[in-house]
Length: 140
Image (cartoon, rainbow, N blue to C red; front, side, top):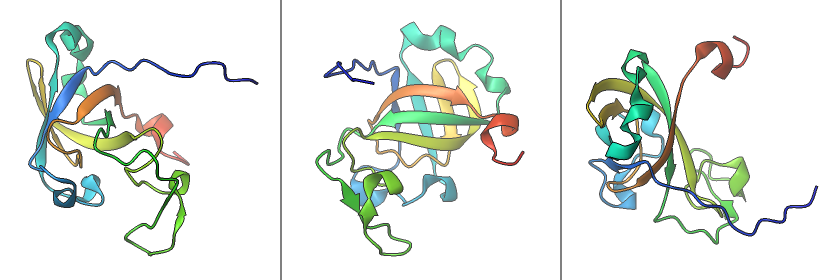
């Protein structure tokens, strides 16, 4: 199969309000941190939030806009062995898309309050998807 597209258009649906201002502030794994963040959805995308408040967990996809897109290798903090970025969760990668499973604490209008997100303040949000134990848990 030949890829003939040289670029793709992504449209941010919102942004993150987070206690993390700089890269060194964010935890290595947001899922393990107790900090609360907010996802602010642009008003034109608010109909997409219909019934999301019924979910306990959601996947949040962000564009890590401050990542180093030239990196192809990284050394994870947990074992200090260098590997290719596609074998790590490093934010530094050619397409810095992050995938975070977060706890959905509340929804008020266009603002989702979540726990477990490691994105920096102002990070663009590109999508949200519901977590389903039946399909997202291997062996379930």
